[in-house]
Image 1 (cartoon, rainbow, N blue to C red):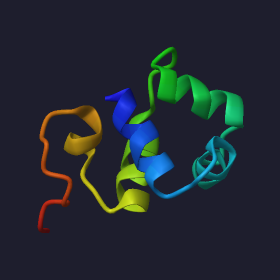
Image 2 (image 1 turned 135 degrees about the vertical axis):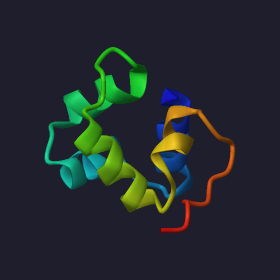
Image 3 (image 1 turned 90 degrees about the vertical axis):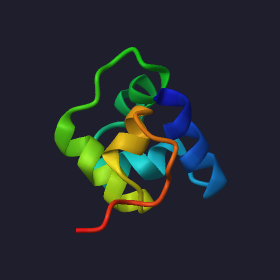
Length: 71
């Protein structure tokens, strides 16, 4: 899962600090999310999925389909 967070961020030329600001956490906390040393709260997973235009399932590695589900 964690490599997907990094890949999505890097594909958009964003820094960890920029994504951390979206989540209202510190850069250090976000770095720990990306490295897998800290579990990501569900609210942050949802925010990341919306921010990147994908699904939580994609972020978690449960699907390889990057497009979000239809509502």
